[in-house]
Image (cartoon, rainbow, N blue to C red; front, side):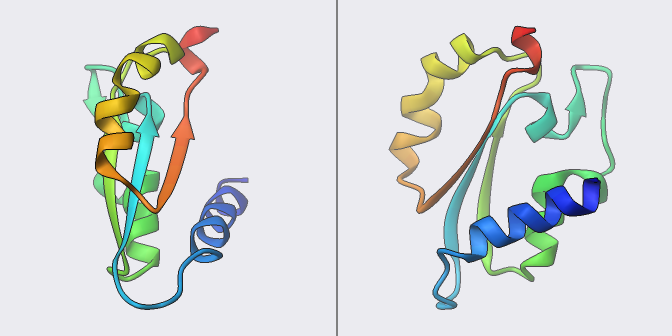
Length: 101
């Protein structure tokens, strides 16, 4: 399942890429995006999906990891302007909802 998710992410991002170098991407989310388990520990960098995507694209993506552990969709709404719109990304990943449950 993990491999299919990563493949989906790669296909989604590369579908809009024209192969001219860096693309600006924002990964906006909670601890799943950040690559941590709240304040307890950070997952190894090689296991964080944002870094897996960077590695798979061999430096062709410039990804801003705007994930913050413990955030809800309400928290996301409050920081959407600064963390996403002000960055003017060409592509955006949004992953929220876990902390709303």
